Amino acid sequence: MSMIKIEHLRKEYPNVTPLQDVCAEVNKGDVISIIGPSGTGKSTLLRCLNQLETPTSGTVTVDGEVITDPKCDISKVRRKMGMVFQSFNLFANLSIIDNVTAAPVTLLKVPKEQAYREGMELLRRVGLAEKADNFPDELSGGQKQRVAIARAIAMKPEILLFDEPTSALDPTMVGEVLSVIRSLAKEGMTMMIVTHEMKFARDVSTRVFYMDEGGIYEEGSPSEIFESPKKEKTRIFIKRLKQLQLKITSADVDFVSFVSQIEDFGRRNLLSPRAIRNMQLCFEELAVQNILPAVGDEGLPVDITAEYSEQDGTAVMTIAYGGRKYDPLTEGDELSAMMIKKLANSAEFSFDKTNCVTVRFG
Amino acid sequence: MDIRKTNNGGKLAVAVIGRVDTSTAPQLEEQLKADYDSCGSVTIDLSEVSYISSAGLRVLLSAHKVMMKKGGLSIIGAKPELMEIFEVTGFSDILDISGAE
Image (tube, each protein chain N blue to C red):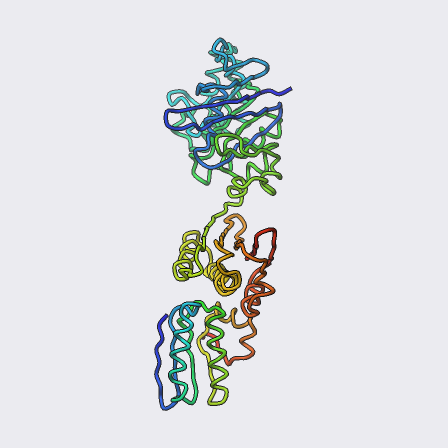
């Protein structure tokens, strides 16, 4: 049975609607990474789950209880869901151990001595037992976040929600926090983690939600999402694709302007001079020297897409055009075709109502 | 693209600066043709050239054909990125090319 069921969840703000229609289920033991570009509602989704934000419409059911129902006792539900924030949110006036024991003692009525014992055990688990009597200001960011995790677990939640737990940390401290989260995953803790740490998301999750366009745009196992994303926006995000689109609309192409657009695109994205040159050669040798003269006005417009993946350093240029079937790699000028074929890793032509040449580099 | 020519007693030295592509190759061709009659040999310095396409290669090839009957054509100063183009097209086997120091 699902632990959390989200149905048609919608959250509107006066100027923006980050969540349009979200449906999802979370099962016990799931470790779900929520990834996606900024402003796509990742944090809003978590905050709607534990009612830090009130959804505009839709329902969230936790353990069979509809928590979006106004009659629901939300503080009881929140005890089932621990939350770890980007900015730690520790109580500055309480020692570390008191930060961890405050909620169990006041909300769960755990006897102080037992809470202390359990609290120390939790601090040991996150490697901070010797800091028990210190105050939050005396700790580094990474240590504070580990305390925040211990504090969340002290409430014995059924699920932990992490809202970008490492985004506010110095890069040197990200690892210590991620390793604590990793060990929780191993112990079978149910978790939802909004994160920008892609390698971590890939290693630790059982499922990945890619959020975009007001909802969960694509979901799957880590290998489905990271190795073979099915939808376009997921692919662009995962491969960290940078795209340049050029359109030739007249046989009288402004050659210099197109070449400098490719140059600018390459420099902006820190491509090597060689990669930039290869793309310019592709444009010149195939589109300008061969395709345009061969297919004439019938071939217009010629759509050129240059794509560069920051993830693996590969570049792909595709040239799509109309008109009769024409393969510049075999029917075009030999010198042009030879240059491209030899410089590229692969060069392919396909024809399915329209012509398309795909050239891969790097 | 910029072209600087000096004709020293029939030895024509041509320094090319910039890109040799579809839009600039005709200019280079014109400049070379203008001096064919008055020179015995041609040296083209490509040390300031960052890009050459097939349009530029064709100009070099036709200059090579003309100069074969005279004192020949040499290309000097080609940077590694240019040498790569000469090599993949087989031009390095046809033309007398030397790379940058």
